[in-house]
Image (cartoon, rainbow, N blue to C red; front, side, top):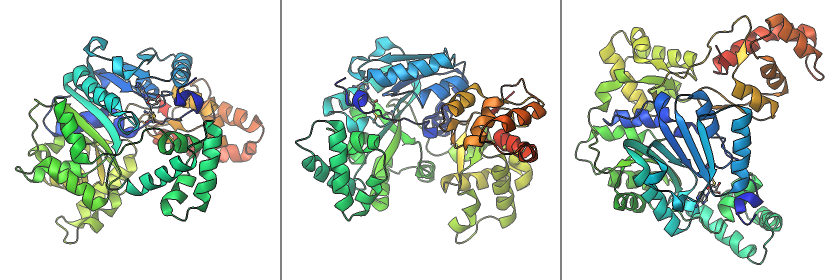
Length: 454
Ligand SMILES: C[S@@+](CC[C@H](N)C(=O)[O-])C[C@H]1O[C@@H](n2cnc3c(N)ncnc32)[C@H](O)[C@@H]1O
């Protein structure tokens, strides 16, 4: 029980930006030949309670998932969840990343979210060594970490809190003392930290190690381990890079951090010897699927001098809005632009201004409501637990108590009438009349949210 992650539970979440679809799409954009999300091998280092890895394993049954974590408690919770869901393509283990090596297998995708900045320098070094040793030739590693300059204000608060709690050992006492001091600190960073849960305060800010780095240092560290910078999992600047052939990408990214006062990075790495094509991705838009990023409809605001006629851009934005959160294929969007050439250009403009997400995977789900609707087993399990549910696109969906009860009833055996009857019989649910009235729209919404299965 000495492990801090066993002392204070740390809640993990599905991270859309780690989905093999996202990693494969970015790798493909830069000319790599990544493994398809539907048939890949994934390793998550520091998987915690499995909230990221288990939904991926559930929705990608032909792929193989391995999750390791040093803390026994979260791994046991993850194991129990995988067993209850009968997800068998996942191997969850208590292990120290320092002992991983090529003997543990080869992986197409490796994630280490929330780890690099929080582990001592020697373990950090080992993390990148493991990424190199275990990464398949066309593999992609995802490593997130805190960066300067944006992280400076939070570090200031952290150092104050570490000093203030230096004599306390008990986690609950340290958290309480830190909160009392935070209340007195008149600083935006202190106020935003007050809003975080105890787990974040304890493991992020009161943790023995939390070392931000400059991006250029991280890139150099990766290079020493035979890894090169591919892009960011969550930044449209990644796609802008194709504009200039002779650009030093590392230098450019460092300046992006200076200018945006960036504080966190979710970097993708690949083997150093892989030739990357940072020039022609824009011409290959037809190889991808696209989904709305919530800012899609603001495309005009990004362009002081519109390059495109307003109409096709609006029509594409609307089409993507209508299919969201699911992606649309390039061919499906051609009618909105009128021709493939114009669509290619518009989609690239939307991509490089952060208005659309790039995909290679058509997240399978039941898009229309059937006679006996069936919510995914994962959604039913999560709804019964009272939390958010994870949809087929790996996005957490918030449900109220009525929607959670409704999802629980959608096991594919009940007709709409039976669902309405059972729902209205449950204590605290709306009247039978209201249930009948709102059920069709509620079921449509669940289908649209990619929570139903065929
Ligand atoms: C900040 S949490 C991040 C959890 C999760 N990846 C997320 O982003 O929400 C860090 C996790 O890494 C695990 N960890 C720390 N050092 C480790 C090591 N040497 N080997 C394996 N896991 C480790 C911790 O137990 C903890 O669960």
